Length: 280
Length: 280
Figure 1 (cartoon, rainbow over the protein chains, first blue to last red):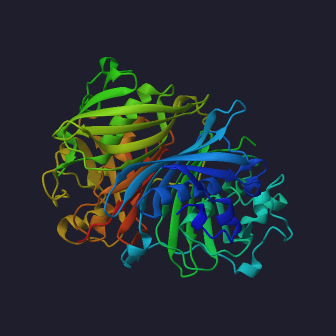
Figure 2 (figure 1 turned 90 degrees about the horizontal axis):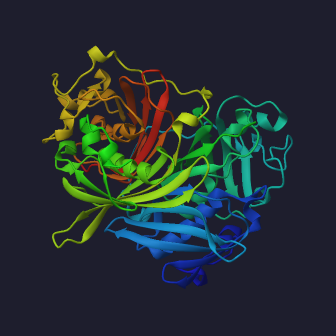
Figure 3 (figure 1 turned 135 degrees about the vertical axis):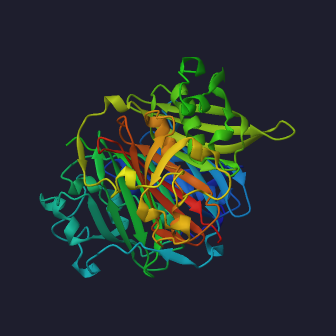
């Protein structure tokens, strides 16, 4: 579907809308509403690319999507170019790149993704999992952007107004100058306008929490080099639980492993990213 | 470097050699020596692509490489087409595809990868890790391909002759009809001709053990959809320890998380793949 058929009743759907310009080519507008300090959030960008690919490919849902971040995106116009790599019965593979424009009008590539898409609703119901939901305090004991101590990312971050993130008390030490030293971040997650989660919004969810490096006592920017997300199940309506873990900070890089659980206690997404560690 | 400068003194280097045909285009020969049953091993293919990209890009070492597997590869000629996506000071990003030939001579794409390369040797030595090496029995208590009970993959698998894999006793139940039920596989890993590990051979290592599904009591093929590997450190000479874990088998798919540790007790590679679960 192209923009015309998307009911842009939520902030997320409005700001990730794409408009078909030519076969496989989509226009988009990167909203200033999803920035962290001045950069556009990587998960929001991934959702935009994911929406374009879901329109272009014969299958609708991202099963696995690998993104390599090339240059920082800024609010404003963008174009997404998609390519069908292979179509199969149960999975299709596609590629997409998001470009913005330099002052002289030339295109500058921001992100490139490779992804395999399928139909989540046709999967069998079998589940054999040893994974368990993250240990999380009840939501009324967790800390949102309007609570004190204020767990806000330094600088103006418009994205905090779009999200309803409630951090587990065990993971907010960084906000009061007492980081736990553990590479863990856990939160209840929703969209501020209460739009329910779906496979596309999960692509935002995996990269929306404060970085684990804050709890490791490191301040500053943790730019993503590469982020791969597996969507394992269509999420049930209601709040999500997200845990992010860093086990290995070495050589100036760290990995962040995210798990997203839905209100029906199902593991709906897993992701891993490689990011540059902050200097500080 | 192209083939002429590779000292093909090991089976791995000989069979992953690539020959520059034109700018960014490399000829390769997929060896029948790296097959599992009849398919060419996915990690071996990744190492071939990784070698071509390391030749084409200005940085030599794969930091993160994401591969989407499209069609099964077979022994015989192949061509790898590489593209520089972006070059930066510390990282370069590239793309590569491996093609083989249909009967009518047309190219059929087997795998496509996106990767970011850097210089492992220029990274700082800082390590802040909470990861610990896998619990592993001493190598003389582990089981190799020539030991009884014989932990061999059903069917003829030439790759077992190229590898020196010693499975931890806790993970060999499947070979005698008594799988543990746990999604875990752990082994000591080396190349049969004792070639020492390097960043390229790590790309083979992450996909070389029997699948975790065997210990879950599932027989049959576990084809990889997507495999992303982070190389975190240049491995020291000597044997590697590999652990592979599956936590979530659901909807006909499973993830496999691999960790590779070197003889100096450093976490040298992390990978995650999404694979189709066997039916059986």
